[in-house]
Image 1: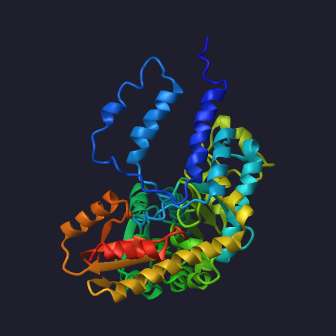
Image 2: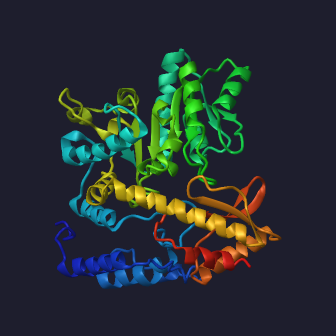
Image 3: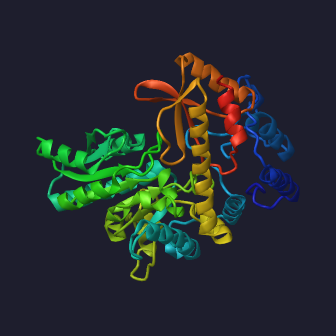
Length: 449
């Protein structure tokens, strides 16, 4: 007889429910990272064995051992890497998805969820300048989105150019996932040097003209908001070169393309309408929970020809009546409907509120830049194009930056990690959470005095 693991336990439900609601009520979110340096693994030992334990004991281990050693990425003081600041509506609906055991691989089993996700993809496509025939799917993150799109670029390029061995051009500032994807796809990466950290159409044209290998270049990747600096590539110029040379044009907008929600920022993405595919991560600047990436194709049929999986047990989802199988548009089959949290939050709050939240992050980035310029011991390295600010602390070594970063967390001021820019170590603030205040910024900057 099977163990009784599948009957709802009221006591455990109340225990977990209370924790979730209390966590959601926290405003502001604390960094809560006090125990990171202490040995703790032995406190988890023994929990996994032949016999189970009371939920209260297991939950106590989570709250006292695990949670204090995980930084809260939704804190307004989390300014490292690319933060996550999901709306409460998106977080709550993510709980609905988990509680409902939704599976979003095919139209047959999840038409309602897929249709709602497609509404979000169509919205993003319209903002990008695509026609209403565009489409795609949600995947786990930007790395999977880039891999899936570049697989379509490779196969489409092979067919168009009549070659098995192909190459794809990208910038020296492209996200690390681009190089990884091209390696996995066995595609040569043609690295084009950026001009002042921006990939331009002229640079791509020169690289194509100077190429002396017979392997054809079949695609080009641009970035709409580089991860380290926040630079938007010359989308219009690159798109025109791609059109002239019959190249697949993919835009990695995992972080920056959330700016499409802002009427102020949208003109900066001119040329995106020329792309064949693009990605944007809702778990970054679109205020959704980890882990989601919207992958949008201008001509989805080209992606379906590459990604549709064939097996006897899958015949039922591939019929003439099928409306839309998300599994046909990316390198995945089993998937949660990752687009539903942002769908719910967008429906609740409206796109205008999203644009205002994006603008707020840019505004605080500009406040930080102006404050840095006023402090004699700091040097602004580049005017923020979106919401990332890079600056030097004059006279500091690499070790000084590391000590400062660890001290900020220890004192619960902020989580900020150093990076490098043009060969030297510097500080980097990535603003996504619209609740980050000028007071927090000043506290961080004054800690470097």
